[in-house]
Image (cartoon, rainbow, N blue to C red; front, side, top):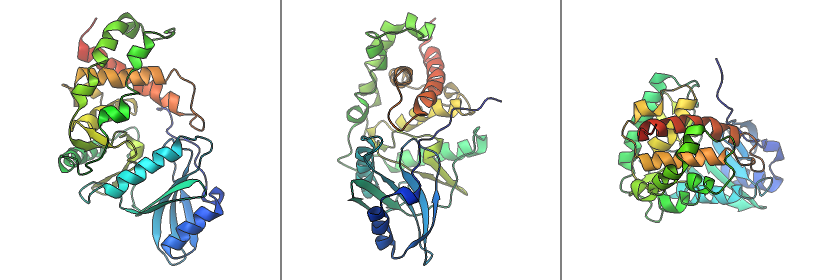
Length: 305
């Protein structure tokens, strides 16, 4: 059996986090960190650590500096703002504190005794996640974060994949996509109005952003949260589910908005052709594999020959 591309950046071990940052975490937790276990997964070149103090207090700490990717601290600041505003009804770990020290942005969360879903996806775990996602959508409609950005503000610059490809080198592009490139660019242009809404959505849902703790589901990493249609998270998650051994998207969301499917597929198709960002060596392969699934979904959804 072939395995899906790995999800992972270069995690920074706790010992390489600046001493000033570690000291600030220990001061907040009220004791010296006696155990620090790095958590794998995700793409950020950052520290993601479950810590235990000498007095037994536990927490999950994520922290990042300006190297090697200068964009990541901005992402963590956005997550800090959203995490601080999430209501108790959101299935997310509780934020304990957040701060900036020595150029590093740090978030400290309650520690959740959970695991990522097994890959390839197990149907029972997938059903558990889909049910939790439906509950989350209901709980976060209307958006409890009034000043959360709109989906167009967050993804408007990204979801121009097909339109940008009309003016770029298309060597190696899928033959079906190349044949319909103009039509795909036109279809994609309608995604903003199709995806508009007043639900608070996660915006980046994948298996590595989900923790299962028995029958409970926790959704982590919220920097891309925005106001959108309540089904936006489901639509954006399904290409990764199909790529990681789960059912194909068209079996789980048969009437998905074609313009938004086109926007997601175009984003993945174009981004996977770009050089890897600093510190994120695996992201393009992951996008490429998702793009194959999303493109087949788009082909079926449009019905174009």
